[in-house]
Amino acid sequence: MLEAHIQLEKIDAKYAILPGDPKRIDLIKTFLDDPKELMYNREFRSVEGTYKGIKVIAMSTGMGSSSISIAVEELAHLGVHTMIRVGSAGALQSDINLGDLILGEGAIRDDGASKHYAPAIYPACPNHEVLEAIIKACKDNDFPYHTGVIQSHETFYYDNNSKEEEMWSKLGVLGGDFESAALFTVGRIRKVRCASILNNVVLYGEDASEAVSDYVGGESLTSIGEKREIKAALDAFYLLENK
Image (tube, rainbow, N blue to C red):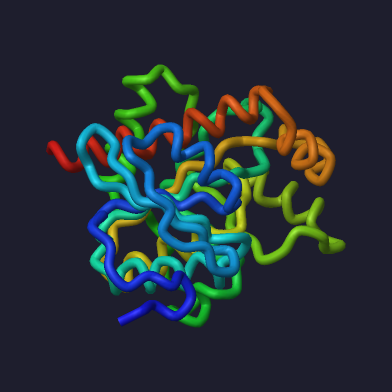
């Protein structure tokens, strides 16, 4: 049966790497052998290929928790059992540099979609086996990384953003994104192994909109971080498959 949003009916891959931006699929394709474009519907652009002999699907999820929840649901219907988000984050701690990777050990559910799946007291946590594989991949590649709690919020421009960031920073939260809490929550409920790798694109205290605009540009620390997170995710798949 054709999935309504991702417009796929059958795939061979059991591992999915999930960027937000459809354009990031082009970069992921350079890491894969024999990449094959599958579908591009709305924000969901998908490619299937192999990495070190493992079938992998790369699919963009767009921005926001609702969109990634749809991606998780529909990929799970097609038999994908392990998913890693590769996205961007704004740091909430001063020791996190541009291009450093942030690995969420848990996420604050300040998004909208996850609240429709479970009460607010339900924790959003990644699968520990997948997280451990990502950490090993980062160590093996000598990638700078940080592990801890992240915050998934609902929108970008709102009046209390700066005050909230200051509060979360004081509570030790590492950084913020839109999607990880929904990924962890839906994945846990649907019995899919999920984890998240975030590339830091904004130093703590900097203007986020300016930093994100710079990130879209060429070879910078943040674009190096983008390559690191993709490599870490794919290496984690290899480690999990050969465990």
